[in-house]
Image 1 (cartoon, helix red, strand yellow):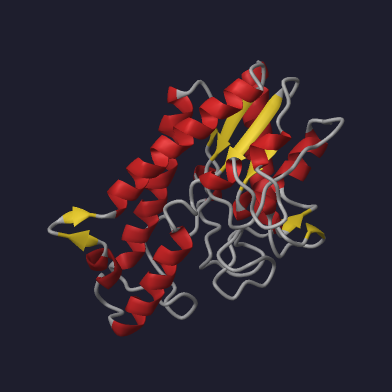
Image 2 (cartoon, rainbow, N blue to C red):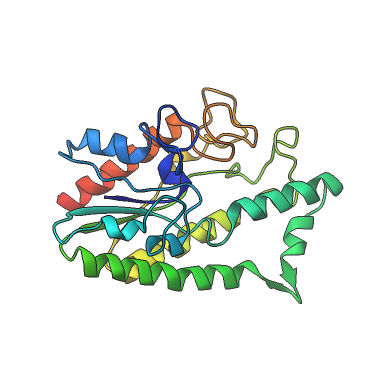
Length: 252
């Protein structure tokens, strides 16, 4: 069973199987299921989902955890980015980057009295991830559970491509680190709750949104091969490979 947000659903990658959720038939859950010969794939991932949508409806989509059964034997969970509002953070960075391209105005805007305000968002989201994982365990006690992290968005070396995404020079490495902190938090919550963690970041280094078509696995704001600021079909194939490898490790 695949649970998650748009990074799981694959919006903008043809063909779409659910208009409300932007779910693609070439997203990593579908590719993973084909690779390990799952007899019946359950994929209820939905673009825009937060941890709240694990237990509450999202448009026409019912609560995602309602799809779980006591007999479910494998669950992937890709969630958390919308809880800390990654898209809003990037949007703010783009707006401020246009005003101050050489500084780090976005980082400064999230820092009050020397304290990074995103730390509290991450802590709050961590508690929500714990609750979701514990609920999964209650509903599907025999399932292997894998928390799937987020792949590279900005260049891992801290550089930027201002003409493509106008983020200030000093904000590019900070924004990269925000994503790394999110993934670190997800890995920690997975470990604390007896789940596995799938690192999709490390293998996607060098395929960020600044790279050209054919190299990048993450689309820039004006997405060509998927929704903007989301993994394209090649990115989902790479994520599927990471998930399959993690499944194989748990079976070894």
